[in-house]
Picture 1 (cartoon, rainbow, N blue to C red):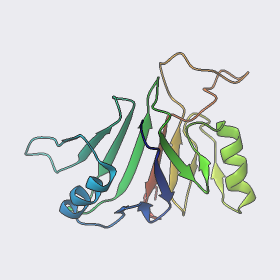
Picture 2: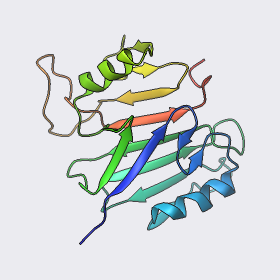
Picture 3: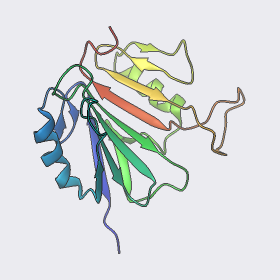
Length: 162
């Protein structure tokens, strides 16, 4: 019997226990709390960017280090056939199993400025959250043809999109 694992989004601080601004080596140690079975890193000379694989290939976590040796963003990707025991929560709402429109409405009701000028990739500046619905998978879609659910979410420092 498997145990539910919750990933709590805490924008703009990170995805606990991985925090924005955390040194790379500390981030590697922090993900051990998630029981990550495999950690892949690009080979030099590129800067380290951790890619942490969870479940049975049903979710990826990418730790971005774009401006140095500290965490700039944490991104979670959901794949077809996702593991129901892995949940990504924002304000108690499961980001990958709640319709995208409901998540955007919840953020607006909390006073956040949602930029959905690109409906496949909406973002919330200042907090910072970025979402995508872009997928080649066969998934339920809205009347406008957009995937009903998000396929990724990114949590970053407040100035990430500036």
